[in-house]
Image (spheres, rainbow, N blue to C red):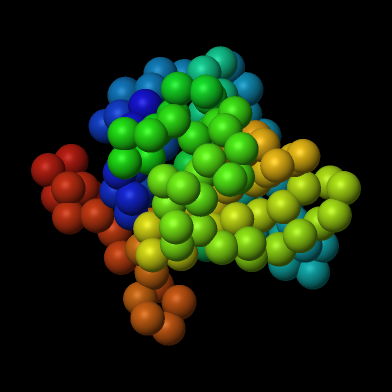
Length: 154
């Protein structure tokens, strides 16, 4: 599985609807529904989890289009380099722009490659999972969907 920053992974593209995703990835074996804030119940998230460690997130804020990928798979790659299971030191060698975004002490650290929209969660200096996001406008308010979506009719 090769991450294409701001585009997607393995034919799955940011901005696809659930039907389009299902036609490529199949029916997810596990689906979670989240209503994050009691004062705003219309804001909902749906997360599809697959056996290969891939999680796909759809949010009501974005008309339930695919907006976040998370993977704990040891075969996921960025720029042809494996990610999960490697130490942060190893990752920094391959990606010198890697920055520590937040340190939660014993529970883990969040590292980012902001120029690629990729985030890494590490525990005990080892990457446990990788998250990647679509590109946003400079004000951070709107998603810039990949041009490749046009071929899918979206």
